[in-house]
Amino acid sequence: MTDLTFGIDIGGSGVKGALVELDRGALVGEELRLPTPQPSTPDAVADVVAEILETFDWDGTVGITVPGVVIDGIVRTAPNIDSAWIGTDARELFAKRLALDSADVVVLNDADAAGVAEVRFGDARGRTGCVLVLTFGTGIGSALFIDGTLVPNTEFGHIEVDGDIGERRAAAAAREREGLGYQEWTARVSRYLGVLERMLWPELIILGGGVSKDAAQWVPLLRTRTPLAVASLQNTAGIVGAAAAACDARAK
Ligand code: BGC
Image (cartoon, rainbow, N blue to C red):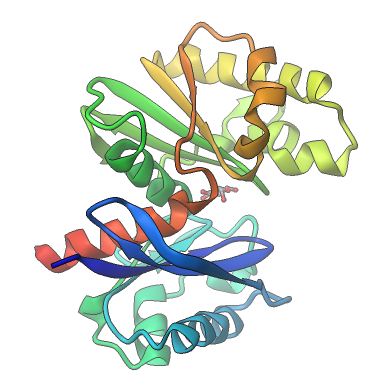
């Protein structure tokens, strides 16, 4: 029997959800994307999550990502969504709003979810050693794997580079905000990656996030010591990884 779970990926501008087939790590049918409500308070976002699940008529296990640090279902940071998320027990909030048992709800960091999907279902599956997955979007998300095991909540988007927060200069949003061409932006990304490389010495860096769909235009411009790969699942990785994490938790 095919194992199906639902995945939801909450971002600064959109909330996306889809049914996921876990054998293949692929979406079943189309994803539904609704705008992130503004202000993006926990209750307002929970309403959007509920609307997505109602549309799919799904009332089973669900994995949900949040763009911040999440420990035991509690959100600890929220740089790109409403600050009311800080300290919110997101697992309880969603379980209540969705009328689910809290054991059926898993909440995790968005980049950790995307990373789980890449190392489990993408070209990097089975890779050993230190693998770093980075997502370039509103911020820079990071997921670090040691022999395939995730080190959660690494938050490498916030390392200091040239006296500034790394993601403020090198996220995809910085390129749009400042109207940078790929040449200028990749110079910043190379600089950012250089600082990370010197701290971590990863064996592979996988580049993901929305901008990875245009990878051919910018990845060849990057200068790094570490081998680079483009994310295989690209923009569906968060949804697939959220569903996979929910399924793992249910199996425990
Ligand atoms: C947040 C991370 C998140 C990343 C991508 C960063 O600003 O601190 O938790 O994974 O953005 O959304």
